[in-house]
Length: 108
Length: 113
Image (cartoon, rainbow over all chains, first blue to last red; front, side, top):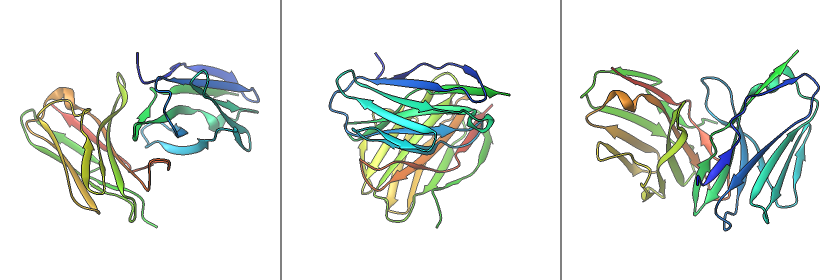
């Protein structure tokens, strides 16, 4: 089993839709979690950290479920510019491990 | 404020040649990570340093790969000899702590023919 797993997608959604991604992790001792966004042929960039109580940044909401060992990212009112690959990152024994990424394509 | 700086941006070389990738982390960051990204395998952690000391190199594919961090502002990843299957984008990233997010460089796109 991989240490961090994501549904690779692609997710094809219309503008304005709400879309959710999940990411599961294997190590229950993991302490810190992040969501990154990667555009084609670019480096990954931090989208948001994930806090235990859940956190929101505009249209984006991140949540952590320690009992089931997953994190989620919710995008509301999706825009064309949200099209990208979304990567979850889990700190496992001080190593920052990436999921394989979920591709999102927002269509007009 | 300069981010993580990698060089070269692109490298094309022939099989068997030595390749050296370079990285300058963000000043003040004490952890540095090298990743490799391919379509098939995604982002793989190769090695990471803490305070210039290699902590975990279990992701380094084989003895042909080596990494050094002689000081807090410079790291290299070397492949000798290179093979076509090493073709990938190599990213360097730095962070100020285990609970802090990573900041990536622009990456080096390596093609081995």
